[in-house]
Length: 219
Image 1 (spheres, rainbow, N blue to C red):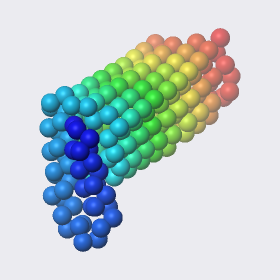
Image 2: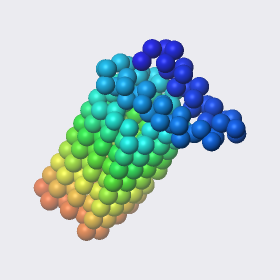
Image 3: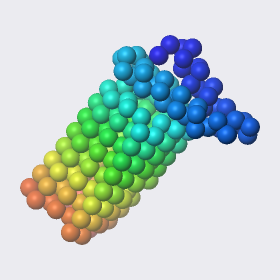
Image 4: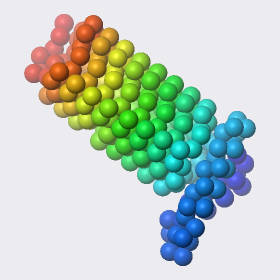
């Protein structure tokens, strides 16, 4: 996507958000923004650093899109297809990613603080060092995901699928892991202080050096 196209997308987003008389065209403009982004992604054009705060991209097909460093704060990404997308360093704070497909996506260093990821599929996604504070992750699929050193303090992971996930060094203090599936997960040096593990499946999970809910540390 050229710099002029990026400017056009940003102008549409700002008009919809700021101009009262423009709100009646919000749906039309949302469709145009989504179509432009889908076309750019299909052509393999870079969307690096795109300013899309608050944009409505519901059900967009952005498979493999280059969205490194993009500003997607508070964007509506309900049901969006971001399989294999590069979201390195992107800001997805408080974005709506309910039911989104992020299988194999690169989210290294991205911010998902306060994002709604309920029902989303992040299998094999790279979330190393990610800030997920306040994110809604109940029922989220994180099978085989890389969550090394991720910040998951107090996060709701009730019923989440974390089978074979890499949670090495992850901060899970106070997290809700009730009925979560952690079978085969790597929790080496993870901090589970005051985490709720009621009925969580920890079959064959590696808890070496992990701090347990009662504050004791495994050898």
